[in-house]
Amino acid sequence: MDHTLAVALAALGAVLFGLAALRQQVAVLATVTGPRTGLGRLRAFWRLARQPAWLLGAAQGLAGGLAHVAALALAPITLVQPVGVLAVPVTVVASAWAAHRRPTPGQVLGSVLSVGGIAALTVLLLLPATQPVVLPRPLVLGAVVLAATVLTATAALTGGLGGPLLRCATLAAGSAVLFGLVSVLVRLAGQLISSGAVTGQLPLLTVCGLAIVVALPVGLWAMQTAYLTGSAHVVLCCLTLVDPVTAVAAGRLLLHDGVALSGPLLLAAAGCAVVASSGVVLLARAYPADASAAPRPGS
Image (tube, rainbow, N blue to C red; front, side, top):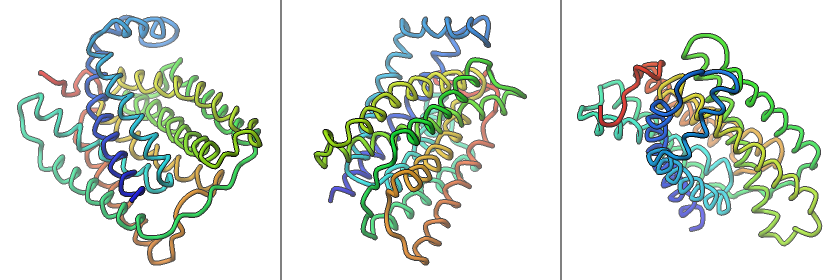
């Protein structure tokens, strides 16, 4: 029952996050003007705090994040994290509705593939029993998060290299890596607290808290910067591909967290992931890479 509730919470979080992404990109493009690289752009982002549209999107994103955290407290990362791909078809429907148009056949097919693949993967991952979490070394955990944070902050500060699509994908991928790692940290902290091991594992819990405080703001900053460079759909597509891969891989390598899949189930799960990823890629190709050409609500 807990795992079913976890999937429902993860799906709710994905819906809220998808709606927040569209709303925030519109606010970013309307507010952050002038220099788009360096400290000038960093200062410009402070003006977003006074924009009601961005604040509403931030509130939606926060609510989605809280739902996702609750899901991680109830189920393994391998089950919860892939559900986030549902944010992509949500943006397709919301963008088409706001622009008073119908989604194209490619967008519909991409949505069906992504939702269908994730639905099948979720059913498969609900079947096996879960494995206990193994506690990592605090220094190893901190080093991994710090390295990813520094690289992502550098990309956000410089604006990335290459054309709009490459810059957008790089920034979105960096933020996705950090979001995936934050999910692992939340999962680990939740396990420590629920098991009553806070006193005995205080150094590890401290590293988790500090890493979340450092990595999450940098990930959010990189995501907002990506909105300036490319469309919200491209950003979300990168997020929903890289985030679960990072979270599942880091969860497996650092925590040994997940479900015990047999050979046939593992192959079936991999096939479902390929189907869902194909849908996400198809959706990404259906939208312009440049933020100035991206569809906006109300347009």
